[in-house]
Length: 128
Image 1: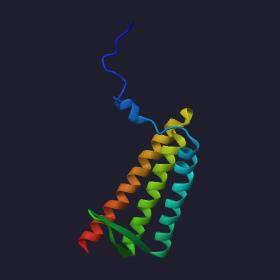
Image 2 (image 1 turned 180 degrees about the horizontal axis):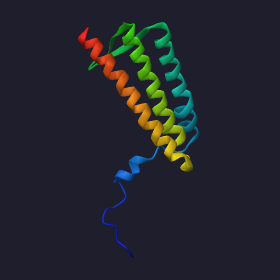
Image 3 (image 1 turned 60 degrees about the vertical axis):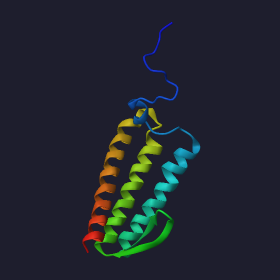
Image 4 (image 1 turned 90 degrees about the vertical axis):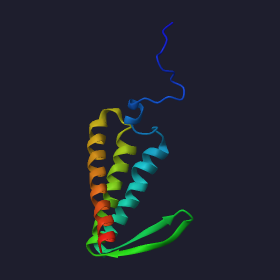
């Protein structure tokens, strides 16, 4: 009988966080296609219409929204597109074991695009 140095019940290693979620119908098609397509369409709408509505949440829940126009709306649209790329890569490509490289590249690219868009939106809302 071989004893493990760490019990597996209740303990997650760093390698457990590396892969995507469970390979179910809802994660692959809902989280991998439907929700990313909604984010993608919202991002393209922000870019084309040059208008974005950013909801506001606080300690007590919903308390209003901010409407941004122009370049800030375009940056919000880019952030939505980055979120769509990240979610699609994470939920659709990771469960497929022979496409892990595609998933990692998509995740990294989507996260960088999302962060660039959100940092731009936050800076422009605070600075202007």
